[in-house]
Length: 336
Image 1 (cartoon, rainbow, N blue to C red):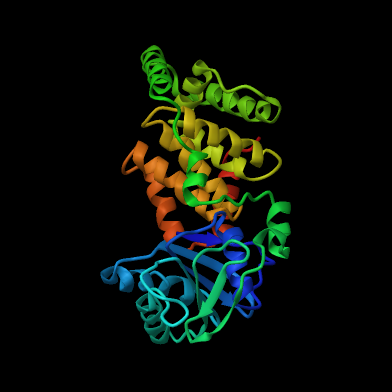
Image 2 (tube, rainbow, N blue to C red):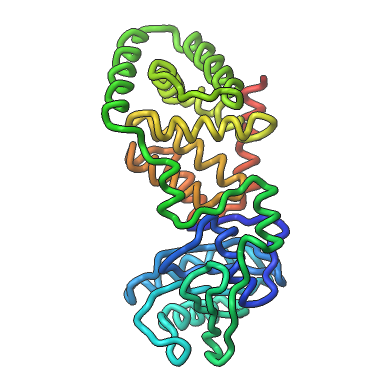
């Protein structure tokens, strides 16, 4: 998982590293390796993966290559969280991960700024330095740091775990999804043979109205509106318009609507809203939520084209500004 970061995110030492990671990822990781690409003490991008098996360590290290090649003059900091199976401070868990990363960084000509182990990322957790196990300390309370304030001001939420974050996108009960799927089937049959341009105009209007109503709406979308919006987004011309809503005054309202539709829409139509959510959240620097949204999209519609393109962009740590330029290009094609 690759995550863009807040522009003022800085790391001044091992304790800062441990405390910063939950805000950079959006959740407190467990049994993970977290790699921060740094320019000076500024964080450029963050990569996180579940602690790999020994055979997967090299593959995990290889994912660094495209990122550091685009960041000349960078260094890397590594945090291993959990992993067990050792006896700190005498022996730290998963030194094989650090050694493999160090070898790959050497091949790429990138220095390792620091490599740290901690059992968790909550305030008060001890940390240990892989290069000198006698060097240790305690992580500050992540909620009381400058980065925490910066993250909160940007509207980011830090979850207790990745699973807690994933609950945000859990599908609605099967019986509700079945009702909406039946409505979608009836809508599809009823609109067969309709003029495509008239449908696009109608669905574009319905989508914009739904976004504008979202901030003041206090009840869930009714089934018929879920079906209408899910059907609308299945049109590439409407979905491409929806991409432009990640920009400007309606961005947060649109993101909230995509979140609701990711839960409420049946498969395979759910993939459209989930992919739009992934796009919007990645632009905002919420890489972890973007990855979860892509997982929902892939589960709903394997091989979904937009999802596949976004997955490649995230895995390659494509800068959010590049994706933003695509939305701006779409906005020029669909002027308001």
